[in-house]
Image (cartoon, rainbow, N blue to C red; front, side):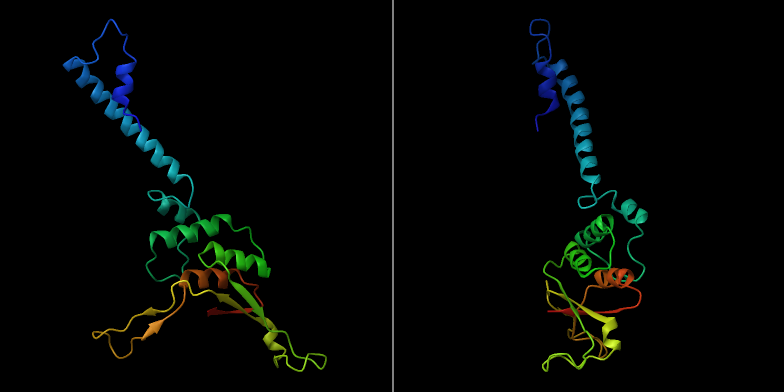
Length: 190
């Protein structure tokens, strides 16, 4: 970025003013710093326009879109907050498998898949799973284990602390809120 004090010196009439004059240079330097600050502020404002790059205005974006979801109890990183916001802003809605796969990808799990559990009948293949009628209301979202399990136990942990934990509370909360009402969703981190 070109400093504005340099640009201001170039705008002076060549014969009337000496751009290297001590007093004039100091004045142009002060005015140039204010213009530099204004340009930097404008560039920061451009970053705040889109939810995936917002920092200063992120709490306002989250307030407008009702984030974090009430069932999220953990502290989220800046990237996680941005991903949740971006997915909420861009989610068009739907109840298809493709919709939930895209939603998972938007929240940081590209390559997610969905398994359904159709009821076994007398016409089913002999190697088919023996799913009951009720199993048709379950579906499983298979998420690639981006980070794997989080090892939590250490020598200061109490006896009831888990040795390791999996899951993404924000993603699971969002999927549960948007799932078809008559279904139950299961999550598998593979």
